[in-house]
Length: 472
Image 1 (cartoon, rainbow, N blue to C red):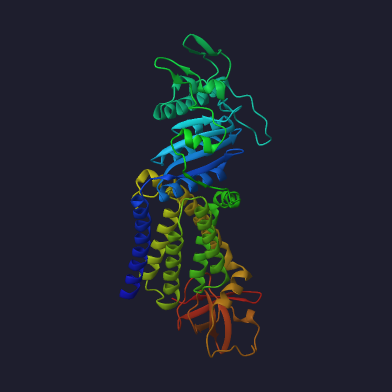
Image 2 (tube, rainbow, N blue to C red):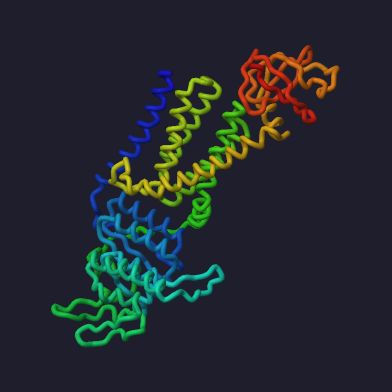
């Protein structure tokens, strides 16, 4: 027990040290005037783009970069992905700039306002941010007026809050969402009632008020090099974050994360019942590692939690093969696996505490809860029906071996054994060998563990399946 205890503590210590070292190195990095990260916001805004932005922001934080620049050309996209991107941008503690390369419609306008400055290319446009709902066919349904007003009000408040935080005119950005009001600045009507505000680069940089301030854009620039010069980052090293294509695969994997976790738990349960580690165990570990791969690509997890998970699996293997029934290594292994899975879903940034706050744990706990519920249902179904099938017998009989015991040819029909008593020659977990009368037979229990030398009785014979129960 002491060895297992210290192995677990050392594993947790290694992971904690690695996380602390990563956090410490990121906080120690001094902001560099010579490094700016450029993150592409191209095409439709969807979950894979969230992963790209998250990766870029975390790399910029670790490198101590002075600024990030969003290179934007988007028609808009999903509201949930948009809000995630805005939250990720809010974690970057230094300068953030949007370069509207061509267009920033709908969700793109929200994301642009979530940065501290906006520059626009010649001929570019920004706005038209009214939320819409699309059917799977791509059609827009006719929504009740009350529902449409509710959604519009919520999104108007969201973009207004970002404008106030980053120093933009809240009235201007709100009119990109709300068509039911007009925008008048310095006596000039910029948007009539019933229209949605969309600004060209020239209109967005016009100055109004006293003292004069740009309506939205800090200026028109032809490219990112000129933008950096205007933004006082002349000569900065540009590091570009490029989409890898794997983000789309990760999106698919993460959409199945609860099922992958449930299948992994089911596989571990079956291996415990069979007291072995074979193909089922390999598939269970593969499902869980696939889950970690998805979280890693999503930018939520580092490799350290996959390492902690493997330590947990190793402790479970020790429980099954080295110290069966000891429970200590099994409990520690289970704890390592649960902590690894939970922490892999937490969105941590360089410099933040290793132990997350409760709000950061809410979504991971919900997802873990979903996986647990699915696993409970699957395990209940398997425990109820699988032991009564020939497949279970094949799995169980392959999982056991009794050295030195070979079954001789049987001189009686197995069906004649019903009601006969015998002795278990090995632990039946649930399969193994038993001496029924003077005949050696491969037997299986109804799922219960029967220890070696226990008295058993043949309950029924189903084909070649000999089912025994323990005699109390």
